[in-house]
Image (cartoon, rainbow over all chains, first blue to last red; front, top):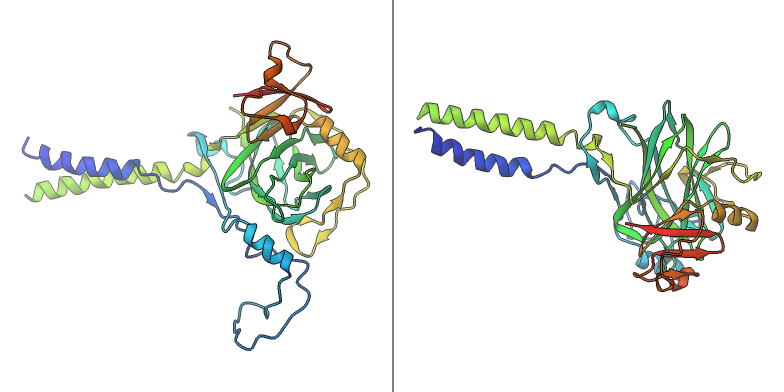
Amino acid sequence: MKFLKPILSILSVAVVFCITPINSVVYAANMTSETSNSNFSVSVQNDNFKSDYFYAPVPLTEEEKAAALRAPVNPFVTVPSKSLKSSSDILFAEPAIYYEFTFLGKDRSITSIDSVNITEKSNVYVSLVQWSPSSSAHPKLTYTLKNANTGRETDPITVEKTYTSENTGISWGNVLPGKYHLVIKNIGNHEAAGNGFANAYKIN
Amino acid sequence: MKNKIVWSFAVCAVIAGTSIAFNSHASLKEPVAAVTVDGSIMHPGYPSQHELIPDPNNPHMYAPVELTPEEIDYTNKRMAAILNDHGAFYRVAEQDYSISEDETVRSMDEITANTKQLVLDNGVFVKRQ
């Protein structure tokens, strides 16, 4: 009994430690620093600038400055989770598809280079952020999975909302075996930017 | 005294170990989706002639392609769900007349927090909680 008190004290500290979650999954998808801008074609010399890691600075247009001010500072994707599963329930330890884009014009479509290759019926989940870099309006994007071999597509899901400080998730259940690319279409009236990742999960 | 210290360390080690083991599997949980639709329903896709070419400015995506009005119309008519500020709306076969007119809108511009049904040119969508 004389050990009970110190053990209980330690237990309470340990329980507090235990229930503080180690950050589950954070797939940094910050695109702002890496995505190149096709307008960056003119280089100017700046005497004060020195870096071994960057090309010389280029002047920004007024439009680019305005867009930079409107763009979120550090959007990133995190994964909320539903239920604890065994390690055998996930098909890929890392996201099968990772993507990012910016200034996707109205009525434009893009296809991911990565693909998710599933060998049995699975649930495919996309975690995403999206915004309009040149407007305060919500972007309107549709997301579809396209079979790389047959060209057949899942029904599109439209996301007409800005997600920056937090991500959202969309998913297709019971996707048939095959290799799928993610297709994103801008059907809104404004340019769009976004990033995210996709993965497949076994069906319980 | 020595026993106390040994026991304390032992208990801490077991609990901390369990905690770390539990949390390290967090990445294996299936994420929660705001919208889920049936992925077993596949359609041919619009018979476009878009050629997928690498985008020198983006290593993650093929270069953007321009959508024709027909393709946009095709996409709108296939749309299975819409996620927006007011919730997730799923395509249904026909209008649900049990939902009042006050809770039904016929344009995305009219949507409010009270809206439960969208009757649009490209189909009918009902809000699911």
